[in-house]
Image 1: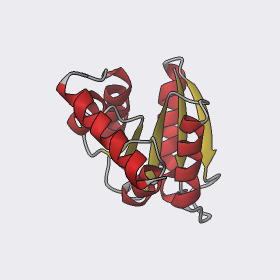
Image 2 (image 1 turned 45 degrees about the vertical axis):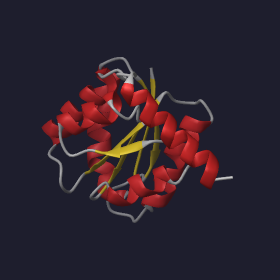
Image 3 (image 1 turned 120 degrees about the horizontal axis):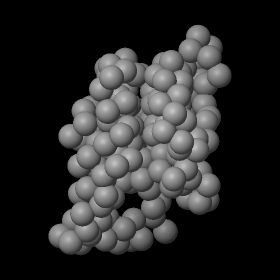
Length: 150
């Protein structure tokens, strides 16, 4: 599995912890976004990178980090074919995979502790899509995209 990981400056430190965690697990990481935590970097650019990496087939899943996770999740969800869940705990990370087949998980570095963030990452990567009735809903989302994003 290959993960695309990007953040703005607010998410830089947490991104580095997540990157280290993933690499220790033997997961290949495409790292992008801010190069420091002190110089401003737009969550818009970071979110665009993640979405494009997924859509171009460079990565299987993505992890998006900004201060609250809100801005970057909005950006990623603007891309046709991408489903990004803003997660705040391990349960929401599992459910965005299990019920929504989300390819991207977003989180907020200013509102999520490191231990919780790493458990969210593990849950997001380990959880399979449940399919069944949830596949019907995901297909409804895809149909909506086809209708409104031509």
